[in-house]
Image 1 (cartoon, helix red, strand yellow):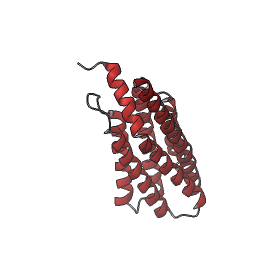
Image 2 (spheres, rainbow, N blue to C red):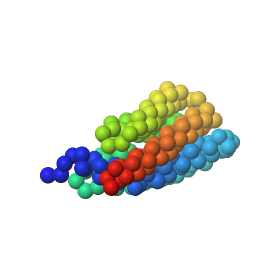
Image 3 (cartoon, helix red, strand yellow):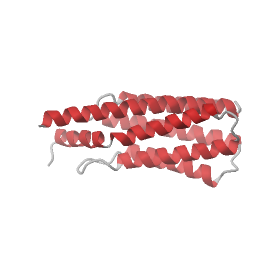
Image 4 (tube, rainbow, N blue to C red):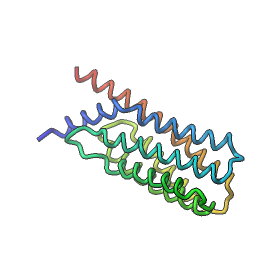
Length: 195
């Protein structure tokens, strides 16, 4: 039977090798957030499609990262679920483009809360493997807060909703990019110690 520390070391190296996927998720979130602020006059339909694109890309990248786990280590169930939820939210946005403002608010709120819970679960799962996993947990907490705030203010208006989501996306993206570079640095340190 493989020693658990050996598996953890292998997982840390794999995460380090695929650090760029985490960074790409962060960059996509930052771009989405910036677009939300520089295009404040966008229509509800544009917001639906923009959210759909972001959710799909985020979901696909989360799945790719989860499925990169080395042999002998259970796949990150929480990260896989995050990816699937994000993809489902993105697909819903595309197949339901005539969605009402209230329905969009509820979709985004549900997506943010569920994604946040699973980001926290992933961070807890990875705490033994990587340093600074709290960045991912903090992103999860912010996601839950966004979901709760949005669901409590469903009639806040499209512009307010856009700014909340945009602000969240930028902060979340920065946290993911920071985590990605720390994971990369940690994996490089592990490889140096191994030789």
